[in-house]
Length: 427
Image (spheres, helix red, strand yellow):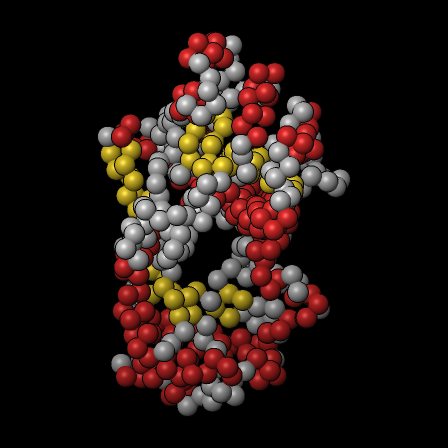
């Protein structure tokens, strides 16, 4: 039987040129995880994303950015200034042998350098070029700049995030460009499939704003279905469908929080199982035990009127909270599995790192960093493929780490030429 290292990977044999900034690094990483030979191209001196923290051992340094580490595994790295004439010619040489090129420059930037899709596709008609920008290549806002907070706001996510009646909130860690980069990887693969069938490459145009909109789940059809938009509700959920009644989604427990919906109707069996557990420990008052949970659906709740319904829900939730506060997340989760109660613990970073399911699947992966004289633990593959394994094969590249390997070993440059290009600031 072949080991994972001996097996071919899904994109083995394909070459990808990664010209993205932090706005699209995850795209190249995902395709590199699938086996593509990803060449990260940076300006001489290094990509600005190298200065994004946090840093290894909290030491700010362009070779110690954990952000850079995370999104550039399975890539080789070269330096190249594509704003120079020599740099443009070198990129064109690389394009001749490449299958993919991904970039995140403002629309028109590469065209002005003679490196847009129209030009590069003449050099290599099979090229799949993927552009990741805030709002896409066309439209009245195509040239607007947009950091993560703009993407989350204009994509609609912030309207739904935060407490009821208070200011919209942004999720702490930047998300918008991660969604854009992941969708860019998918779009690149769809174009790749088309190329395998027809031999034709194409230009994939990815809008961060559009990608964020796809994360809104049921919020987008909500106005059509219910006549109004969903609103912020924090740890509760409430809408016209529930007559404006606030119902809790997050409950405190002894050592943190769990996610739970106390529901009737279709959710009655789960709620009844919770009540039976509470009763076994003497924590279920009579009105909870005798309740017709099957008949306690949203129509019945709404018919009570907002004030009466809210009083009843508050009373039920208080009893549940008092009970949950006597147990830990682990105890609650273990019992919920036994009793088939629909809930989930709210995991901290520590909980995730110690999760037995992830451990059983060998998710977290150690990767050697010889330059640090250390081994760093990374999140593992996004999926498991039996015949074309996804593995972490190499750490993120150092600045210009593979210049000699690629320029001399693969493109045939002489050492004097390499030295000359470096002295002229081309590489």
